[in-house]
Length: 111
Length: 241
Picture 1 (cartoon, helix red, strand yellow):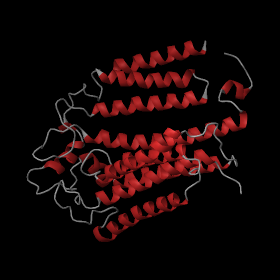
Picture 2: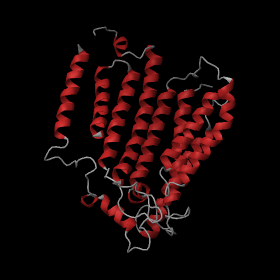
Picture 3: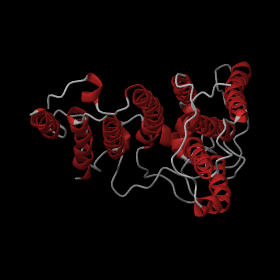
Picture 4: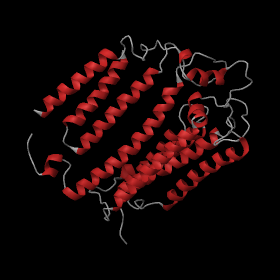
């Protein structure tokens, strides 16, 4: 059941967001989470022995669900925008504080 | 200590999701067992492959494209707007720096010469993908991202290229305005925004599907120039004259 694998990938991302203190690693975790969710949404549209939803000559009917694919296209673009803004914020933080570690920015060390 | 708490929390939530995902009262069908007859997508597919109909309602061979650009065209316009706002945010945040970004390395001979060979191929592939968005997998967004990657390669390989290209701002604004104009022409001729006022043509041909290829080419140009703009903002910051 590959769907469980995609959900597991999402939880890997959530664990990374909870545990990591480095801003770049947190952005990467966010992207892993988003990737897992996108894969899961696409997999909900899968139908056994169905074809890609493109009409070729003499190929009619029996398609997989096209709607999750269209929705995920939107989600990918939003993810790109979020990642771009997050990376720019991270660059500004690095220019101001000289580090990507949240502990060092706060000036404490309590792990 | 915090990592152990994070692991426990994640595993607890994951177990909850895994046990309830396909339980009795879940809306998710088992993997691959879904029936298209029970979903909204049935209408999208049937309007495209109905044997009684002379041609599909949208004329587009790719059903995903017909959903993204025709049935949900207004949503796609909003999506492009989100990308524009994101590019604007990156430009504003980058402007705080007021300093030119310098790199510790010099681009080597291989990336310098290999770029000249490979950039044209990447650009042509990107343009091919978004021109054929209504026939083959792909479309404006992947094609635009490929164009952006070609410009990333140019930024990386050539020192002289590291200036903000003003033409992209013009192209981006022009493509965005043209999407609006196409929508408004539909509003004035057909009665609603983004009405398909062009003939559908024969399915499978390059010039078919009415306004779908027009809109997707515009979306591809806009996404490509926006991604290139974002990359340029990362490389430059605001240079103070």
